[in-house]
Image (cartoon, rainbow, N blue to C red; front, side):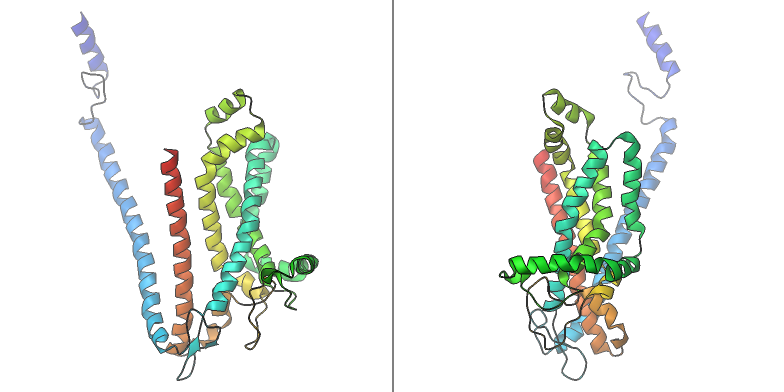
Length: 337
């Protein structure tokens, strides 16, 4: 009787083997295996294409920059001079590197905590009728063109930040990082605040998506043990979303490092003989703004190579930032497991 029953069941499910497990070798699975192979091949090809593009960009930058670097009569990494023309070109990137890194760091210090807080409010505190409108409003910031941010910051926002800069200089001017410089307007500090507003949607959107994926059992378990809502967020939501927040921060940092139009529009360029200072209330130029401002000078291979060398440093800097983020995320995952 049992054999008859087993046969009847097997006849009803021809794709299953005698043990009740799916028959992966049956004819019904052949189409699925072909689709899997096609999808795997397309995914592998897309990944290899991205790697090839990044490699070709790096090779191009190296090939164009090395001849100019060999002719450079100044220290490329420590000099402030920028005179890439003539028979004895002299150019260095220390000022560009400091302005780029300092303004991006200020942007991250402001955007990451604020973005995470907004994401937690939308996912954990906001009522259901407010979640979607609030998320949409924050996401709309990402659709604003860079030139609009530059115009708004120059015409409206600058007057609001000037008193803040003055107060910080009066209170913390004894510290070299906040020492007065006499520059008002396009300072590194001001650029960093504008960049933080520009990258805020990236941090908020990605953090929001990660926090939404926190397992409900984790949150309910913490609440069942008597945790308050904040304790539940601190012990369940934030640890689960930490890799995503790191990824969002690094993606936003990449945007801040490479921003061109708004920074070019706002930055106060220093004169050639201006004394050097590490104050965030100083002016300067980032890699992107220096290249954009002097695009008309790409008239000789030597000059072009100097600017491409600066672009190569920015390329390497962005690559290193993303590599560090990947290492941190992988270590975090391994620790969690």
